[in-house]
Amino acid sequence: MSAEMDAEPSRAATDRATNRATDRATPDDSATDTRRWLREMGALLALPALWVDHEPPEIATGLLSVLFGMLRLEGAYVRFDDPRAEHPLELWRPAGERPPAELVHALDEDDVPASGVTTRVVGLPTTGVLSVVSVRLALPWESARVSVSARRDGFPTEMETHLLRVAVSQAAIAIHTARRLATEHGARAEAEELLLRQNEVLRTLVDDVEPSLAAMTRGVREASRLVTEFDAASGSRPSGRVPVAVAAGTRGDPAGRAPARTALLRLTPRELEVLGLLAQGLSNKEIAGVMWLSDRTVERHITSLYRKIGVARRSEATAFALRHGVG
Image (cartoon, rainbow, N blue to C red; front, side):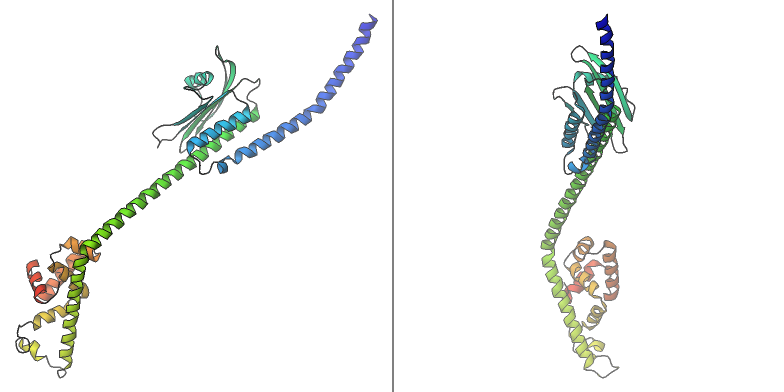
């Protein structure tokens, strides 16, 4: 009896000491947890910068590694759906033909809301009892589904749930950025390829029209010579009088070409170019391509030069150009 009475104060003292030790340990443990959560949150916020220039599958694999290291998981499954992609991005760990059984069970039930977090306890003969947490994100550009499992009691804590949501959000942002950059790179490569093809077409066009351009240059030089001759003839006559060769149309101009030369002088440089190309047999569209003009502008030039040289048809304009060395 005396031994029992002596034991009671001893147990009471032990309990009080234990309580005091627990009271002292709780703040330390809380501070340690807080420091750990802050450290892990900082690491999560830095993930998009670490995932720059990575492909979406690499980012999803990195997310699995982060979740396993941070939450001490038994299994994890991630899925990112892009409406523009033919197939969703889907990965899981441990690797195998199918995701872990407890996650498949959770996926089959699929009662996770469009955006949010759910937790369920799954008990299967092959895996035992595990806690499965599922997170869904519904973003304007894509949707995401992540499910993780752990065997620990109390999983997930409030802080673990928060870390899980942040990690999934960071991965979704990084995957969207990677897909957008890939689209932009593809569009840029396509534009560069188109530019190369255009340059090749232009080089071919220049090779094809180079002889025509040389002939046109000769025609312009001939027209310039005619202008010079006419100016010289005009300068040698008394002021106010018409040159004899021009007025008579025969004397000094046996061929009777003075009126035609006068018509040539009324043509603009552009119209002379059009007349030279027309005389070489080029169509309106081909002339437009050579001179970098629209079809409508070429038509206006042709109408104007017809009126100035006094012809009505293309054949007449060609004959006129050939008679006077244009083209």
